[in-house]
Length: 304
Image (tube, rainbow, N blue to C red):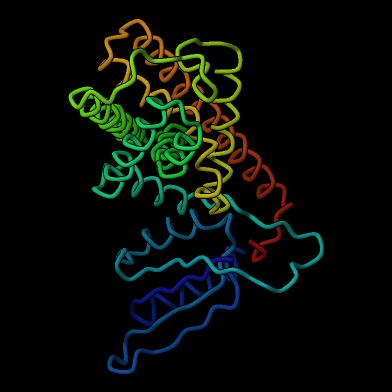
C-alpha cells in the first residue's frame, strides 16, 4: 500500500481529496490544517499501487511542487481482502530507483573495484570460493535493472546512462583484477599460465547455449528481485554472468593470453546483452499484465 502526503493550500487539497475518493485512485483521505498557517494544510490518503502514476500526474497538473509531495510505500501486515492482489510493480517507484542507480556513484565504483580484487585472486588461483565472494560484493544488478526500466519506459537517456555505468563498473573490475595480476607478476608470485578449464573458470572464454540461457534467466531474476526488494539476495546469480568474465579479461591481458582475453570479452558482451533482454522482457510483460488487470478491474484498489 502507498500513502500520499501532500502539502498545499486548503482549497487545493480539499479538491484533491475529493478527486482521489471519486476517481477510485485513493481512499481514507484526511485533511489537517497547518498549525501556523490557517490557509494551508496536509492531506494524507491511501493510494493504490497501480494508481501511483496517475496520482502523481494529477498532482503535477493541479500545481503542487515536488517538494510538497511524498508518496510512501507501506507494508500492510493485515490479511488482504478476499479476491485482492498485491501490486509489486509500482512504476514511479521503479523509475525513481532506476534514476538513482544509473549513476556511477563512488560507492558503486568502490564495490566493483573490490569485486575485481577478489575475483582477480580467484581467477589467478582458480579458487571458486573467492570468485563467488566477488560476485556477492558486486552491485552490477543495479545498473542492469535501471537500463531495463529505461528501455521499457522509453527513457533512452536513462538507459544509456545505466549501460554506461555498468560498462564503467565492469571496466573497473577488469582493471583492478589486472592490477592484482600485475603486482603478483612483478613480485614473481604469479603462477605460470592461466588455466581456463579449471573448476569455476570453465566457459569464461567460449560462448555456448548455456551462456545465453543462464544470462537470460539471471536477467529475469534481477528484475523480479528489484520489484520485491530482494536484489541483494540474488546478486550472486546476476554477477555470475559478469564478474568472473571481467576479472578474467584483466588477468588474461597481464599474462598475455590475448585470445583468451578476447574470448572472455565476447562472453561478457553476450552475457550483458542477454541480461538486458531477460530483464526488459520480464518488466514489459509485467507492466502490460498490471495495466490489463487494472483496466479490467481485477486489481482491488487500496490492496496494493
